[in-house]
Amino acid sequence: MSNQFGAKAVLRSVLLTTGSTYVTYAAGLVTSMLIARGLGPADYGRYAYLVWLSGLLVLVMNHGLTTSAIRFVSESLGRKSLVDAQDVHRRLQRWQGWSLLAVGAIFLAALPALRPAGWEGHLALFAAVALLASFAKAWYLFSISVAKGYGRFGIEASSISLLSLINLAGAGIMALLGMPLDGYMLLFLAISIAHPLMAARQLRRAEIRKGSREIDDELLARVKPHLAWTTVSTLVAAFSNKAIETYLLNRLVGAEAVGFFTIAATLARGGVDLLSSGLMTVLMPVLANAYGAGGQERIHRLGGDAVRYFHFLGLLLTGVGYFWARPVVELTYGSSYAPAIFALQMMVLVRGVTLSYAAFGALLTITDNQRLRAAEALFAVVTSAGMALWLVPTHGLEGAIYAHMASTLAVFLFTFGCVWWVLRMPLPLGELMRMSAAALSAAALCFGVLSLSEAPTLLHQLLAGLLYVVLYLLSTLVFKAWNQHDVAMLDQLGQRVPALRRLAVLLVPWARAT
Image (tube, rainbow, N blue to C red; front, side, top):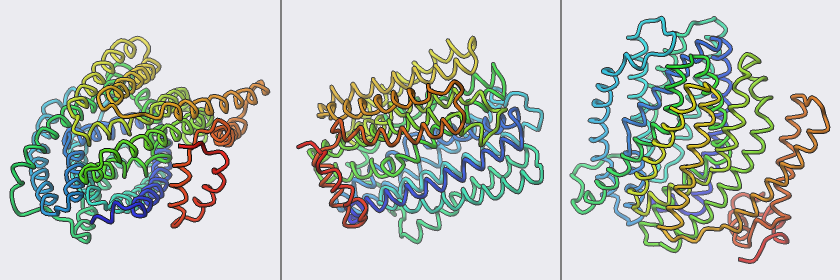
């Protein structure tokens, strides 16, 4: 199993995950577009609320189990102990079963307060779809998390790609038939149930199975506090990641606002996944494997590189997403969803600037700083709740957008401070500033070009986004944002992907000495 974390295997996993993300995102975008156009803003808002609520239930059901599974399965393999990895799998899976039952009971008790705005159908149908779909997806996410611990990233990539295409085909047929909201809800349920069934088959083929004995007491003594603090941070974070804003929009504003907010959030998240899914998928297992092998110095180097690469991709997302927001929304969803444009621009702006948060969070998790993660999550939910309760009742959709931006920035700065002061990890601040300067320069030039037209068209904005990409990439060279370590790594990876070696040759004159 150890070869699953070698340089070539990691690159293969990154490319596989990134490719599957492209397929999934494209299929998901078209599926969302078909459903939105087929249902209209009000019913689409109710459908989006159902999907959001089901996703929230999944987070609560799994709490910290998926993170702990990745961490301790991968770390055990880093110590060459397959038995410990299987025992961790067995114990965490048992805990997940109890979690599913407990959360399901709480959901049913709170059902009257969770009704979608303007819901006129049977509440039992809504409850059944939300609960069964969340059961299925929670089980699926736990299974693929165990697989990631083994370095088997292809299980998630293949299953989610295939099912997203099946979902697209189903949504297309329903749109042609003019199906009502109930039909799309049942399709959502069917696709959700298919996820764990496919994953179970792939885990058997990969010979990934739970152990037959109880987990070692010494290992259990480490798993329990890690899971406890991860649970606290996950549960608190679950209610701070646009959850409060979405709930308040549903209760106070209406289903249409939920739809607009969800479209913006979906497109922003899709942009993040398209650019960074490969790095995000392998980051924690790779760091945990290095930690298990005793490489503290290597963790610092890998962490610093991850922060730089995430920041680079985040700034790329910020410019492209901002300029393309209007064309994407109007060309895919239609002019009736125009209120989502401003929401999307603001969300990609804040998500791009704070994208390196993923690297900070992974570093705190694998170095046993779960108390800090819990404190960070508590800070996040307090900030998010305060902003949302202050702004949404009086400003509606715009209030939800500003509340999300403020809380996201606050949590990012809090986590940055934790890594800086507690881990004492040297962060590449110089490189981050160079990349930021490159992005600002490229954006200023693009805004200057757009200002030459009194009324920029959709084509103008699409071209501005492409121009930003070119100018940003060139500006990173001018500002010398890359170093010789990056060139050496590209050259090594070029043994498998020749294009990367050619890129390394081009970077040589522009790379700074490390």
